[in-house]
Image 1 (tube, helix red, strand yellow):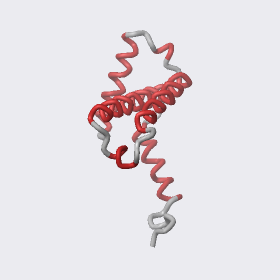
Image 2: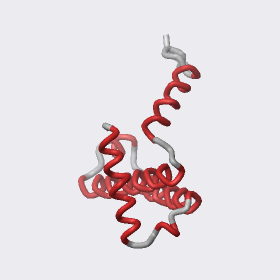
Image 3: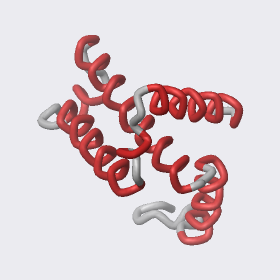
Image 4: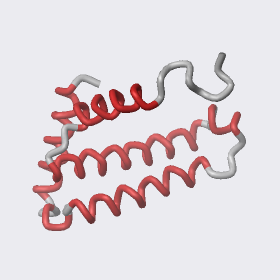
Length: 111
């Protein structure tokens, strides 16, 4: 996702929260707790499905999954904004570390 799309969303979330005077509730602690709650709601939509069902959920469930994934993303974006974390930069840095920790071809059973 281009950085400008993420920045536009972050700005929209800031404005949405400011218009409702929610900033006082949006501490990093509270945002992390809300993120965990929304992640649980996302997991609940997939719980008890078979592997095949989870790969191709029916349209109504897929819409609920989409909504819950959006909630997770929104809270993650708000948390990162509250802490001054550039999510794109952080993700690239983490992938750099992952590439060093888990070299290609090092998975068990890989030949």
